[in-house]
Length: 589
Image 1: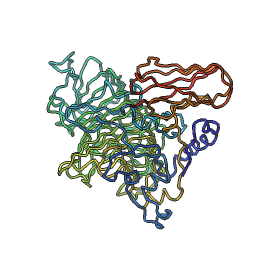
Image 2: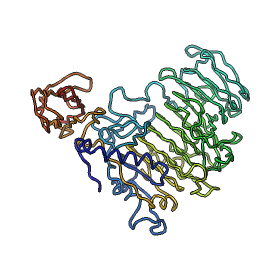
Image 3: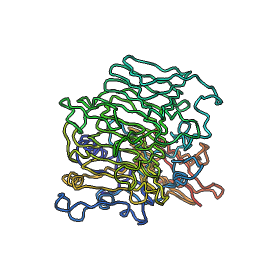
Image 4: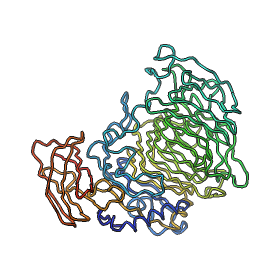
């Protein structure tokens, strides 16, 4: 079992942590499943950490050591996973309640994290889950949507709503040259709006694009084409059903499809083979350019999309086919779709701040050699059936990860190599409603079909069967061939927020939570005058501890709390010789 060092020791020994981070980044094409720094709770009736995992390899046949199983992976191979209530009382479905995915004060998730890859993409946090403790830190506020039928909405600029707009219709249009939508019009897509190679479709902030239910309106960006759809938190771009508010329903429309030139293992796209997209006559994807650029999506909401074409062949809310890393994707919501919220076949596109709500298939679905990264991801799936003839009606997952799927061999890795998505700071919330029409969602993560993957600093809560389910011999054999080491811990119950970059001045408060007294421990790199200030969550200073000059080395100072000091979250700042170190403490009665 790996040891958990204090931050002072970790920073002194930062060469070891850096070596692990480099190994994790360089090893992105490996075959391991890495699962650490996560908070799991109530994903079945076991009531234990080990019980949150399902899946056993076939022993020697997979090259795995005796006794290896999913529970061992989540508790012994990786030792900083916790079974604890994340305090998300309004995250599970409640009728007429807007969900809140920010953990309550005192949540164990708010001081729990391992190191993420130091690759320039991931941001190191001191919390598990998609939203941290800051009062203004909920990035979902202001632009997301939760009304299942649209009955009371006023945001579509239709007659009788604020600021009504004229309607421009695009009826099976192919754009061979660039086009920019106007901010003062609504748009309706009938059939397919195709952005052809060399063309760019630009959609301004606040635009509303209706997709036609009768003709399965869908926006398709072909290889070589681009879409630049950049909204804001106050003016998101809305892509929704053209049915009247109150009659809008999941599966009405086709959503957005991006087809790129990045590598995929579905076919050997490196030598010029092309893969046909799922979802009907969508087109082809794949190439040999992992840096391909299909444009930019930011603050875009796709509603009531997803449509089954034939069994196991569906449109999604957002479908990324071999999309390259030159594409910018952040702040997207998929709402009430009839299939996956976000699906990736091959490619390397990175994503941030995604939220999938009430979809009837998986929230985050990866395969075909996908090797992208995602940070800050929220999924709360619907427990209802996926389309009636979809294979395997046993419920769906927060993240379903394949390397490849039939008719291809699961371990087919031509061109793209093994699928190895990396996810950090996700919050997956299941649904415990039961009955014949409520089969899912069953598991937070399902790693299968020879995939590799990383899931760090997440919350998985309220699923019916498991937090993590691992399937298929080829998944285990690839993992067991080179068992990985766990990442260093950066925040735990005995540490606080990470130190400012470049500083060797560290501090912590203990016990945490505390009642009447808390001790601030810190390491001074050099002698100097020391002052500690304590602030409420609202930013008001409530106490100061001034000690004068202290010599270099370790020190501990106590704050004896006044009886009138209320329970709650407090922040402290230790100042010494021009350096500062901050942290968070929680007072309980």
